Length: 201
Image (spheres, rainbow, N blue to C red):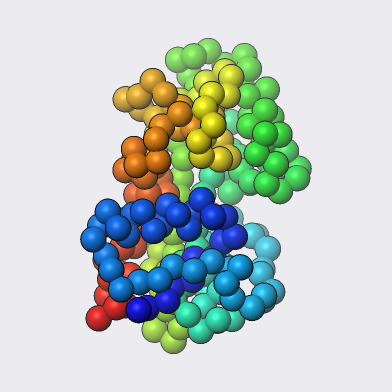
């Protein structure tokens, strides 16, 4: 069994990656999170792009644990805000990880934007760092539009205000399997899946 570290403490992300590996029929891998390894200094997210942040987090985790490590950086790019909050999505309101404050601020900032111009996209960069061997970075985008009020209880972050193109439900109203199949993170992790399978050879 090959152990791979997913550099997160978010149990939803761990469950998501395990579901994706199962759907891709990838076996022989045990996914663990940061809570399963000794603590190590985690560098702040100072990159200008999702790719820079994801790779920095994966490198730190692989170097500290000597395990293959996956990290992602993702966020919401709002057309009417010139692509912001972007890499600042998790701390858009000034406090890191305050999901409700972040989405409320975005809604307030585009409150006067008409429905036809409320386009947005989720972006995810996922990186795999294998100690002393290889680094791989992939990026995926999930386009949609923003609602005027939060809807749904599934997911996290900006999910309750994001309606994917071709759907009428928000991301937070979709069931996990549907969201995995569509989402930016699901797409990015599937792009990494063949690289993970090779680690079990």
